[in-house]
Length: 278
Image 1 (cartoon, rainbow, N blue to C red):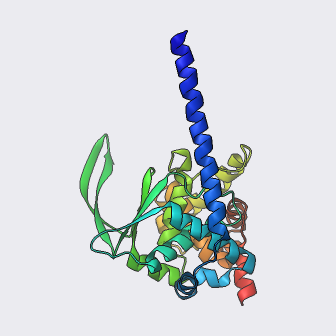
Image 2: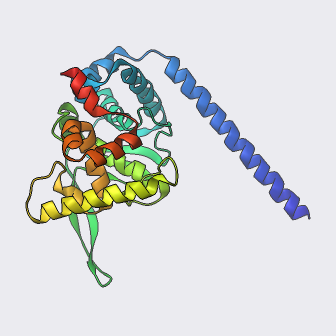
Image 3: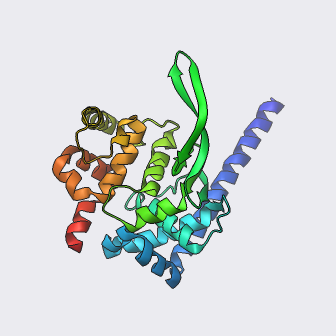
C-alpha cells in the first residue's frame, strides 16, 4: 500500500510540474508577443524573405509574433566555422513559422536546435540495397530534419531560397514540413490532421498525386512538383509544401485537389497572396 501511495504522490507531483511549466510557457509567450518587433528584424524580413512581402497585414502581424517565440524557444548553433547573426536566425525562423500561420501553435515541440552550416555539408548515410544489406557512404546535403531534436541547414541555400519566392525550391519550408510530418513519430507523408476522418481523403489525394509524379519522373515528363518528391511519401509531402507556398497559382490550376488538401492543412491560401500582390 505504501508503495502505491508513493507512486500516486510522485505522479501527482509530476503532473503539477508539467502544469506549472505550461503556465510559465504561456506567460512567457504573452510577454514576448506584447513586446515590439525589432526594426532590424523587420529590415531582415523585407530584404531576405520574399514570401513575407506577399503576406496580408494580419498574417504579417501573426508571423512577427511567431518569430519572437520561435527565436526565444529554439537554440541555433553555427557549424563549419559559421558565426551566427540575427540575419541567419531571423530568416530561418520566419520561414519555419510560415508553416504555422493560422494553425494551432505548437512551435515544433520535438525540435530543440537548428544547426547551420555556411554551405553544403557532407553527412554519412546508410543506403538499403535490399535483403538486409546496406552500403555506407558520404552524401552532400543542403538540409536534414531529424525526428528528435534538430534541423540542419546550409545557410547559403537558405538565403537563396528565401529570396526567391517563386521557384518552388526552399530548403527551410522543405525541412520544417518534415518536422510537421514527424510529429507523430513517423516520417510517412501523413502529418497530424484535424480529425480521424481526414486521413482517408488525405491518403487518397496524396497517393494519386504521388503516383502521378512517379510516373512523370519515370517518363521524364515535366510536373509542377520537383521529381525529388517521387523518392518516397515523406519527400512528396515536403516537396508539395514548397510548391504550395512558392508556386500556388500553378499548383491550384494543375493539381486543384492537392492544392485544396494542403490549403485545408496549412489554413492559408498562398494563391490569394500572389494575386493581391500583383
